Length: 192
Image (cartoon, rainbow, N blue to C red):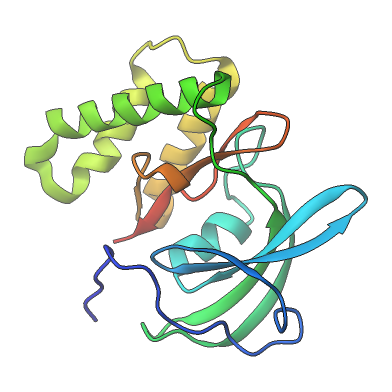
């Protein structure tokens, strides 16, 4: 099966009681995001995932967790199949927000994205593996990251290696933030 990862998923929102009537607030290459409920003051969304890699990122027992990773509330199972042939998985996660034009999270995200891109350019002759090597470069090269960011990069590197995922810290929607300004690796991997 050949995937064109430069396209936004065109599938309709699958028919499911948790999703019916909810407002769509975003789409990615393999994800549809629908507004969820507010529970105990925490805003939530439903992510409809069509990529096995994204599903593992949000639900695997050994997935990256911590300050800079999304809080996952529930895995609600499947709802049909995407046009790419993979099942749609419904995962309930905390609602995240785009980075503003300035602020600490934006500065960290800009440094991460720029450093990652620069490392990709250094390792571009290795084609598909350049992203993994670029991520490793960020992990082992002293760049002044906080311990929490450094630990998150290590966890992301381990996940990418274990699951055969390709890291992507360049696309703006892959780095988002909580309302309190905390940077979150919202969707930093994709399928090989």
